[in-house]
Image (cartoon, rainbow, N blue to C red; front, side, top):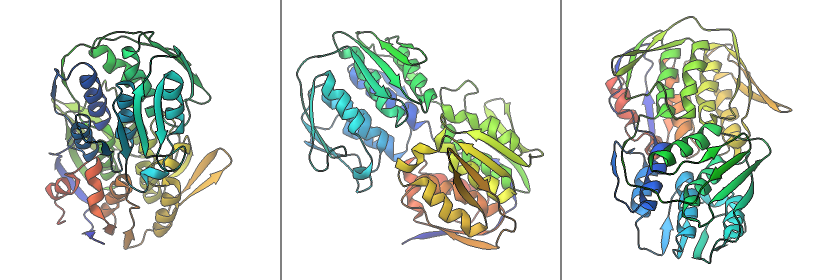
Length: 403
């Protein structure tokens, strides 16, 4: 398997040229555009593989739709094809076939969709057929598994004659993504109401619009990690919104504790170093994609951590908790589960070099890459970054690494 080697580089300075647009926003506006008749003008769509797949597949006339490893694409297209009565088989990679989708399928069946499984019950591939007519205007759905199930139902709800009320049960994870969906629906002409445990979506018609997608805060988080670990850092990031719809903009507050100050300079966000704390406590319920990045920074900087809200990491591209535990041990750190929280054990003495596996997970590759500021790093299967940040390694070259 291919690897990338990065020699230690402690001083960083420059502008990140290829920071991608938000794939979370891009994938939502592509669904909303399709539901409004594909007449909108969309600017700065993400070049991430997940979004490129969505662009291609949402208009595909093929009977079999392969979403590869794109979870958002799988969930959004399942709802879209179901409610628009398109006969499709939606499949993906072997890992995608291990990621549960039963909650969404059950909800769509309750609404009136004819949808089934072609292999294992509760998991992809799924087969969508005819939508026979709305059977209910109220659904109860768990909020602790994936906010993408909720967002998928929200976006298709206006096309239902009675609209839809979603009752959210249990712990609600990634709430900012639910609010993001509501905000984007408003841009396309349908205003829904997001309450504490209820989302009310009226029946209505989406309108076409013109929309520019902001840069991706999840991708930006890796540059915060580089700044945190570097001996000297002067990094600038383009097209980030200070009033972002994205939950991962929480990285600004998290990294203040880990030694990074973010400030706007014109159209760029400047990252510079400040003093870090000795420990940090954080609930990742609403920003789980930041957990790997923060864990690696804490381990490398000798900062103890007490984390909650990591439950959803087990059903991502890989079991991210298990993967983090294995890879952090290579630098003398660990992530120890204690009842309903996780304790981050920092490294007491970093090695001079380390080899990291990525488990076919883009975020594992990018979370461990910033360690190249403090040691020589070798990363397995670097091509995985195409899922969300295809030009990541090019941006590292711009910062002075020979990749």
